[in-house]
Length: 128
Image (cartoon, rainbow, N blue to C red; front, side, top):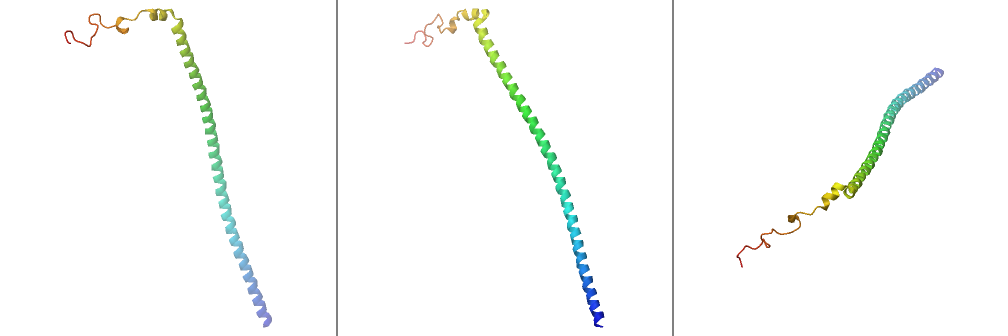
């Protein structure tokens, strides 16, 4: 009878050990499944981040190209304006019609001369 009791106890301990191991296996499978799901989420988030980074880099390149083109256009406009100023100054100095116009005498009213009838327009005639 002792042998049967010992065998039953050993069988129960064996079943208990197998049950504990089975519980551990189930827990590990759950953890592995959870980790796989989290890994997939992380990989998907990384792919989305990489796409965003690529988009932002492309946008930065376009902005840099636009800025460079804009700076080039500004320099060209400034050169064009400077040339126009220089051409205008040259025209003022070298154009015969402009020189002829500038050589004309100013009208009396623009030279600061008073009206010829009254030399002091501020005083009325006959006032002391």
